[in-house]
Amino acid sequence: MNLELTAEQVALRDTVRRFLAERAPISGHVRALLDDPTGSTETVWRGLADLGATGLLVPEEHGGAGMTMVEAGVVAEELGAALYPGPWLSTAVGAVRLLTRIGGSSAARILTEIARGTTVATIGLFDTGAVAAIERTDEETPRVVLKGEIAIVPDAAAADLVLVAAQDRDGTGLFAVETASGGITITPQRGIDQTRKQFEVKFDGAATRRFGSLSPSTLQAVVDDVLIAMAADALGAARAVLAMALEYAKTRKQFGQAIGSFQAVQHLCVDMYETVELARGGVIHALWAADAADPEEHHLSALRAKAFAGRLAAVGDTAIQVFGGIGYTWEHDAHLYLKRLLSWSEYGGGPDQYLTEVGARLAKKGQR
Image 1 (cartoon, one colour):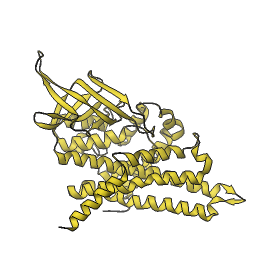
Image 2: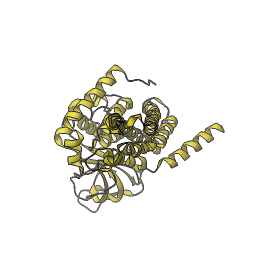
Image 3: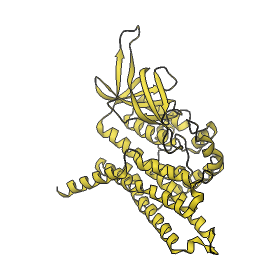
Image 4: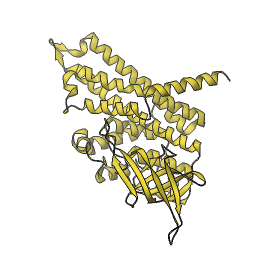
């Protein structure tokens, strides 16, 4: 496991960072899409595809770059730092990692389309018992439809395709539903973070097709991959708001001197820096483990990343203390970073439950 980026990874980071600064800045892009359910524009999505970002994890035989989760983490961190509100994580990480594990010709076709940037996909893997696949034989042409609902599906309004874990007579399977088809209702779920687009999705006779069976281990691995990528995104957001707070502390003056010279402010800045760097270590290990470790270590690394990186919300909160009253204003970006970090902290449950599970697993391991 490398703790430093390679020359190729640095080039990838710099390319994505420059693209986001020029084509998707917070002032001109992110804020304009806060109330847009898709969180994206065709121009920016096409630009990410042209950079190879949508196909980063797609195997080379399907037109992608065939890179690892470490490179995906590099991109995710930059997207978090830029508060990117679009469906990259759902499509380029969640859907791609799922389809790659399932395999088959149908999955290969969608992977190729994702790499080209022509298909946006999202996953509905949670609440696996909430959706059923039913074979309709009362029609001239028998077909399979979905019935049920999933409370939270990210980026559903932007997606062309929703990949769903549903129950049928063979157990748990992976099914695909086109969002433009009938029998599917997508309802926005407003949360604290307007840069994260979440939806309730109801299926009432939506036409579907089965891609294959989903084992518990496959489901867990994909969920872990999404958690790890989101931790990298949160790391980027925390890094960016920390940098903003440090710069403000250097230039903002009170009583004739920069506020960064006051010991109380220095302690706040050190606390933020310590939290960001400790989280970075866990995220780097988790990204490496996603491809190189055994399933148990992969899962444990995801739990650790979520457990500690969830504390990054404290960085956003502390940064606003450094900014003072200006940090609470709508015009300042600090509150947007705080909301991004708060939504990550609560995603899939708060950090405490993950800390508890990490402790339980380590205790059990020590008893062997």
